[in-house]
Amino acid sequence: MFKPRRRSVVVLLGIVTGCLLFSSVATAAPAAAPTTASARQAAAELVAATNRARDAAGCDPVAVDPDLTATAQAHAEDMARNEYFSHTSEDGTSSGERITEGGGYAATGENIASGYPTVAEVMEAWMGSASHRTVIENCGYVAIGVGYVARGHHWVQDFGG
Image (cartoon, rainbow, N blue to C red; front, side):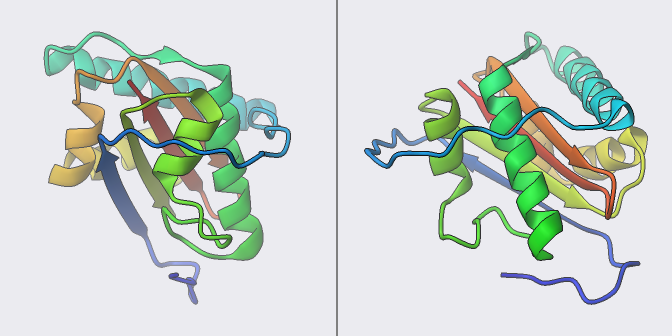
């Protein structure tokens, strides 16, 4: 796992999975949506920006799924609290496993970023990266959940289809 050492480091990763995952693992109660008004606003703005990018690519908009939102928020909070940056949680759970368990989706995708203070900046970075753009422009996704933690600007986009 990557543990950032400097606050000025800006990092982003993307992952796409399209496999069916089965799990009998019990999960804890999902985390709440972003806890502050500004974090909720940032998450809503990111969903809107994502849907504009999807529209430009000829995709239907993704709908906000409260379960995916809880899953994304929990991962953003975990990365911020434990000072790591990875699609794999410190307990070994992959993004695909989290999204499948949290929302019941077979096709999953996740974008994460850290260090971008605005929606415009994180979207510019993701759209400038082929792997992140592929996740955003995957027309097979129908749902999204966004997590955001202002301290360190941790962003998580979880997609399901």
